[in-house]
Image 1 (spheres, one colour):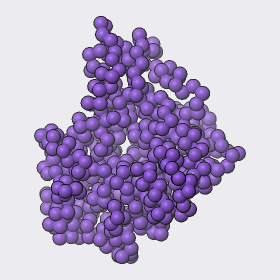
Image 2 (cartoon, helix red, strand yellow):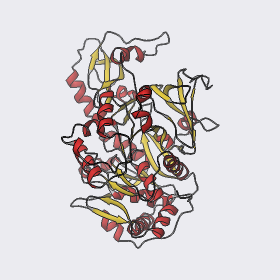
Image 3 (cartoon, helix red, strand yellow):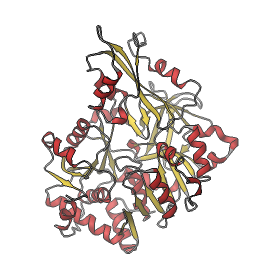
Image 4 (cartoon, helix red, strand yellow):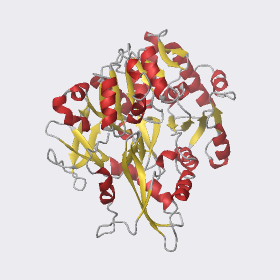
Length: 518
């Protein structure tokens, strides 16, 4: 593991030590460390030629493509930051993220070029849109117009070079500023938990707007591993790559695993090179767990993490998956990884609670974000003066140090690896003329872990039309955030202070289940 203090130095290290080794494979093409280094330096030169300097932001709206990783590494060299946009967001949400980041350049994949053309007049900070890939590709010319620039901004450990957006409890996303210190600590701690070295062949299947994509890829860069990047997390292609490319390490969300175990002939594929299959970011239904353990015995590792901690903070190793004597641990999030402290605190007092007692999960490590972009109040609310990050997740820790994530203090729903805050959906539905009151909850789903469900009260003199409400949501929200069902009630249950009792709304759906939130 490198002792470099920033990712520019890490890239230079592998370029010097292994110039002809393949660093990245994508779509049938390979990039050696020397080629990747040159492309990143051209990228840095192009950013500077566009007038960008330390503190500026760019944004990427694309499916997975090596250019996004190149841009991130070039940002590390220049002192800029790459705000990677969740391509699953609805147009108004995309506009919000790009404008919040104050992105000066916007890089767009072919699937989203038409969308951005229609939004262009709503993006006042964007000075240029650059298309990546497809018949109208502009990225190659943008790079080739510049000679490689070797100048390196003297990055401080807490400089942000990646900005990933996480939904906010007020209904708007927040830009999580991820730093050299945090990302390097995540890489170092992850490798201490799961040994990875320059001989590893790492599959990057998850979208790069997610820590399971970008942070995972940067773990590979930090150790000089070869990355195999997928455009999209297609289950058939993911399984095929595991077998044909002899992948040694990968990370999936349970929704992808649920699809992989159903691929015809999956059990006959030779995945014997696989040393570690990490999974997390959403609940794992037990039927999917059992099928996955049969398909990938001895390599499954559950991880629990968050964008604000640059990725994983705890893990449940294969030994705990495969031992029937500790089968109850399958609904835990495992133990903290090296370099990370986890405790459970009373959310009101902030004091640690006893083993087995419920509370809010707090995490402390060097992995922690630099804060929320442009939101010091939210940063102060999330990080205590002594460095503990309040996760917003509820749970308990047993006497052996295993973390059980049983609920979310902030009512967040995790569906297929995507974080969904009910407040976002409630904010949209509350504006519909037929709705007088609304609450959104997460309910179990065998494929996605859980999905949003809306409980609504009709406005006087109106009737609820679920199909019309769904169409209304689809026009304003990403499809994965749209409620799968609408329940009409006379009134929402509330406590004496008027707070909606969402636990009462959720109870009928979760009864008889071991709720597992990872």
